[in-house]
Image (cartoon, rainbow, N blue to C red; front, top):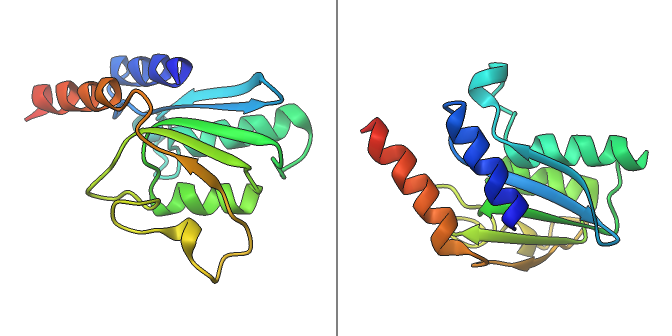
Amino acid sequence: MRIALEEARGAAERGEVPVGAAVVVDGRVVARAGNRTVTDCDPTAHAEIIALREAAKAIGNYRLLSATLYVTIEPCAMCAGAMIQARVDGLVYGADDPKGGAVRSCFSIFDSPHVNHRVATTGGVLADEAAAQLKSFFAVRR
């Protein structure tokens, strides 16, 4: 999670919403990323999506069966869907997202009986630090 927090700090320095992610496979970080939606002019360039893409390239397979994704905030519906498509084994995230979280806060995508893959989830890891990054970023902007 510390690596994801570093990536979030880097994203904030670039003027991006401070969200960071890291993908771990067999105890090794295979990808890491921060948000790049503004930089790339791409609404899909969330930290999770970028990290999943890089991880798939790094291991040579789009199915990340033994991967754990660490992310600083609860993933949105798009990112949760990408984790299902990638067959990610686990998700560890920091702060809940009451405005768009799709794991527990607003939606429970992983719990839907209609999805074909389950993602083991642990939330609240270094949540205060992750939430503080977001709060200070938006405090400057408002």
